[in-house]
Length: 152
Image (cartoon, rainbow, N blue to C red; front, side, top):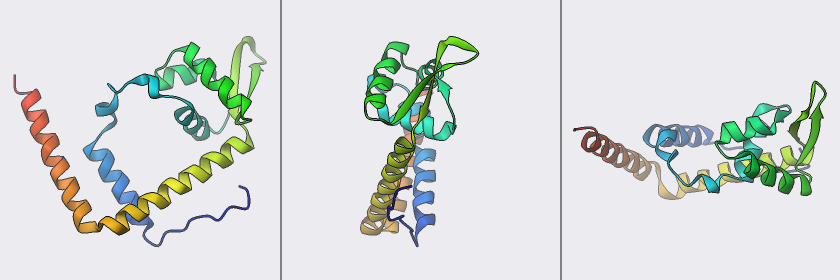
């Protein structure tokens, strides 16, 4: 990573707890019906970062549940910014492999650190009591919603 100040949180456990609780209350299936046209470069970069190696453009389309045409646009955009490199699969020249560049990895890590730092500020400024109350209220709302939508 570039000479970038790494954020170290004395309250890192709070951030992890907050995210864990957030995903418990708002599981991914709730977001599945969101407009998939918003899936773009950020989602692709995170997926490529997590893969830690080249993957096919088709895999990106399948995992992000977007069209291969949309993936082609996203990859071209990322390639123009030197965030990814495309290569042909030596086993099958019809297949395009995509991998993050070092610059792409660094940018992801910088954005991730900014996100975590911002989340810690939210926790610090809002306070743990209000965050706990938020999650209790959200859980109650979720339970009522599920009860009402699954009662037929």
